[in-house]
Length: 263
Image 1: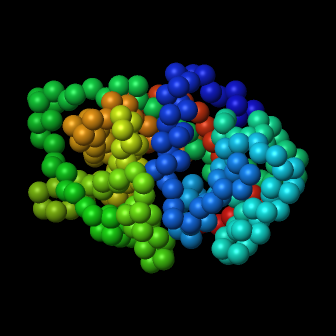
Image 2: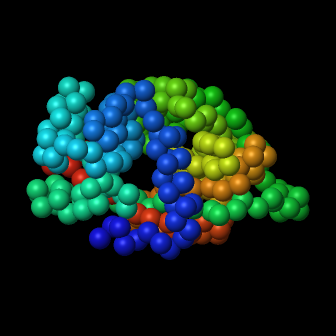
């Protein structure tokens, strides 16, 4: 059961990371239905076009699903539920599985209990960060990922309208070649790292590690003390990078849907 994976780190920090992640991924198109947070963004990020079952509510599960399905159909989106250790009812994952809903796209939330200041000598030789506005960052990472023009535009809109401010950055060499890009969203003393991407030709050279370390230092200067990020459960390469930075596994989540979901 997914609930069994909580408890490997401080529970308060794990829950804070979940809350901060929800706040940072809030799209303009969202509503609540009897304790469930329904997000209807037409963009690529599934965390912004899914149901987060935050509270059990008073309605029977089938009625909640029916009301949610109507909203997703109206938005021309597939019905998706994000299942976490905090989903309500507590056995939601088993109930959806019994209905034949398929699980997919498992991801892990990792947390960093304390952002340490970087020694001056450790930054020697690092490439400077280039700050990017929302449109420029969405276009950069979207093009690298092969996203549609619509998905790129929605990504930029979500960043600009987010209640938690996003800051996008690119790491380039002296000739201007892109080495890596990423962004962070800080909410008070906790910061989330998002959309960390390294072009295929630059991978395996430590650029993602350098980028993330510099992002954490930027966030630390703004007042962040702790951090979190989300990484694919099968992405061992990225997990090794985050482990080097001091992040540790907090919990796993996945999605379920009654239909086949194609990104």
